[in-house]
Length: 210
Image 1 (cartoon, one colour):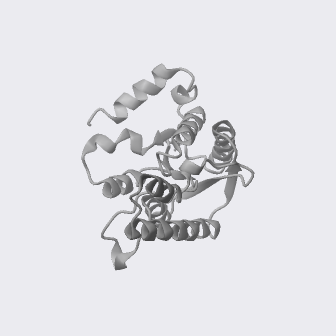
Image 2 (cartoon, rainbow, N blue to C red):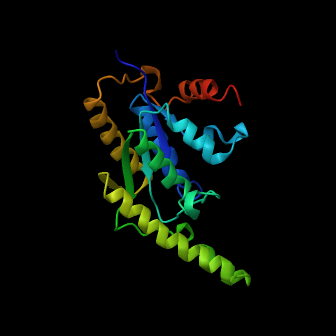
Image 3 (tube, rainbow, N blue to C red):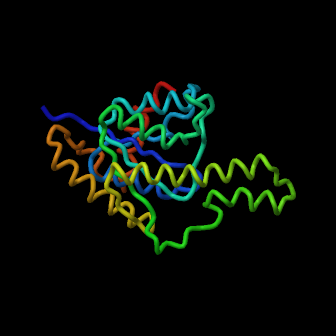
């Protein structure tokens, strides 16, 4: 029996805001339901626990990987330093969820302020660069490469150049995924993201308990 299906959108946030909105619109255009941190950060729960809890009922993850590593939750087992995005992907993989991975094309001139190393640049300009920040930035740059290799070994990646091209790539990937998962039923009312009323009505249902 067909059922409505949800898609969890995982990525860093500040640097990929426009791309996250493009991903949301692509999910809605395909008739699926997006789940994003923007919808539930006000619940007051621990960010990591809340993110992982929201993944369980979703049917797949869309993962956007730019050049920021992102927030590293504390108190990880064995002193690990995985980003919240990496932890979300690992959790989904453990639950046998499908992951669709999207990365910038190598031709894209990625803004300097959206790179992990930019934090050190700002600190130098402001005169407050510390050895702790240097160590953290270097760790994050190395761990981002580790995360990218982890994804490469498990999942097919698609590339994008702009938010618009990302939206197109996601729609194509989701339609292919839907063809292989007839148990998922697109929601007709969510298929027109240009009409904000339908989206806002659905978003109100998702956030009514906040």
